[in-house]
Image (cartoon, helix red, strand yellow):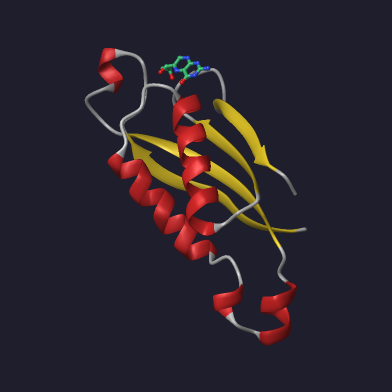
Length: 117
Ligand SMILES: Nc1nc2c(c(=O)[nH]1)N=C([C@H](O)[C@@H](O)CO)CN2
């Protein structure tokens, strides 16, 4: 299976377990890899036959605006399920980086992989 990816997508969302995190949005960076057979689209040059990474990116932005989770784990798990269901993605790897959470670190977060390639 081939991979369609979105690298370092920046989103703003309310996320965190502490009181100060519940009153403002924070930035998250998302790296998404999605299994997809690109041959039908490549042989026809037809976007309708591929996974539109712009549409997935827009979906993620709207998801981030609408949700207010405490844990990045919950954000990752729910978003992954929604992308797989809505876009018929059989396998997805998602890395979420929370850049401002630990000052001494460039970033912290989670990486999950769901489905079959
Ligand atoms: N495994 C996790 N650990 C922590 C999380 C999290 O979402 N998953 N969140 C926090 C706080 O919200 C933190 O980001 C604030 O600095 C702490 N640990």
